[in-house]
Image (cartoon, rainbow, N blue to C red; front, side, top):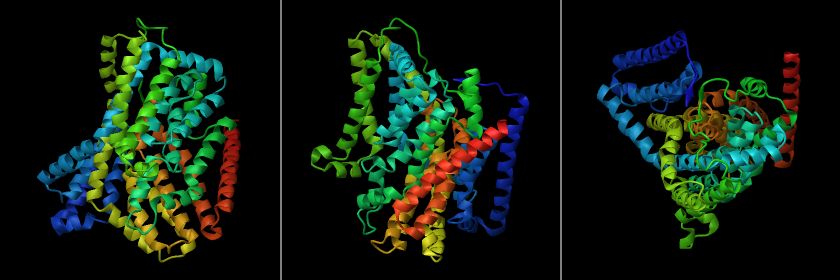
Length: 546
């Protein structure tokens, strides 16, 4: 990993901003605590707007300072301070036990999957198979548009799980996009845009299973709600339209335009920030021996065995139906289960092919681990931030907002639900947690069987995906950065204008859907608005550059 040089003045300014923001926040809240008492301070923070203060602080600091680790740490610390009523010992206890340790426990399976995938990438690179695939792709995929669409197509095909999607697509397509001078920021956006949005409209996926689980006890069939909501999931569907249109129209806007311009004109795929190329395409004894098939076989084995692992954990082989198995599975168990088997099989395959020695294969283990350390650290801090925010009753606060909104005009409610879900998911970095909170509320607001129920349900799911898509503390956003080996904050900053554009169009489309209550009318309108918006943005960009 290489870190671009920062001037002493930049580092000093960063430190001052962090210290100032944190000092002001602590001073204000301590004044309140001293004046009202610790118990009343905790009551003040719980289920109030203050409950969302820690993630807001973390996100704001990350965007201002361009430094993610300290920003997330300060967010976790501020959440622990509020949750413990400013008790020094209580703050440490909340931060360590309820925050970091619980984060590691809850994410251990994903950590294992990340590390194993990093090892697989290191193994494949060591054999020269990645270089062979890059040479093949350069010969057969002749344009930047073709490279983007190929990446998009692979992301659509891997619809089982978003974690799996992010890391697999990045590992496979990196040589292709690099050869066509597509910036790492653009690659990470395409990966992110075909991860959660695809899983949210795929009936057979870990996301469909999660929605079904959260719908239990509402009186509705979870899978039926999910399927009926698909045509109204405007954010996910319009994001796919947006990516395809951008590829064909050959333009970018916002910070992404700078990254793409630098990639095309200067060959600079990173522009700024950390360059995550810790897994190098090494040249050794096996250089030149690896072929395209030596990349395809391990990836194919990984996909097949991981799907089998998800089904096994869901008790498919114990008699459960295919759909029920996905409804009962746990990706944090099934993916490590499958990836470990795939790793062992890949090592045996590569040694049998005499592409790598056992010693070299074992040397790839620490290389793969080192490559995933940044993603693991960010994911740990982000999950700890979610945990401490949960202690402050953010879900109760949002439930109160929704109940208040339900008293207004029912036809506008899907658009309101979309905005609330966006805000909650962005602030907490979890789409699953967001629709886990909102689904029971949505099913309670609308009477059974009416079309508004399905529109409201889709608005909840779409808003959760939207907030998750652009949140710096979202695990999917983090792993999209890791999959593309892109600086995390570069990914967030370049992706934000794109997600906001699609979110604004989706909001308008939900207003229309609330009145016409037909996907056959609302969705085409949304598609026209998306393409029309891009044409306007392209003309504005061209005029500005001219």
